[in-house]
Image 1 (cartoon, rainbow, N blue to C red):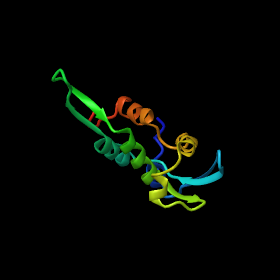
Image 2 (image 1 turned 45 degrees about the vertical axis):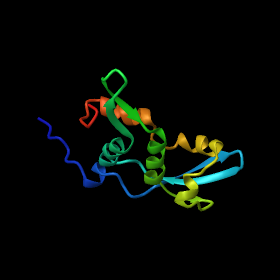
Image 3 (image 1 turned 30 degrees about the vertical axis):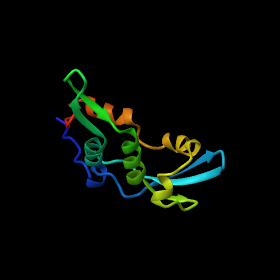
Length: 124
């Protein structure tokens, strides 16, 4: 019988190293250093932008703040940019620039799929 290989700690945790990406915007290139969300950060994100409250029929329904979602993802996943943008500037990007960046970041759908895939959390 073959013994399972023991995991290394570095294989189990999200590293602090962000990956450099370059996106083309209508205004020129923008470099971003992006780190993945940890499991806890994904759970924490849900408490920030999803609330469950009664709808007009009295049934409990989720209310999703997509602006809050992207604010959380931008501030958590983007470590730095070139040209250097402040957090305030990141929150005030032109729509064309935000659209160019969003493909590099976790999407709302990927976050929800992670919960639906047998995970436990506040919405499961």
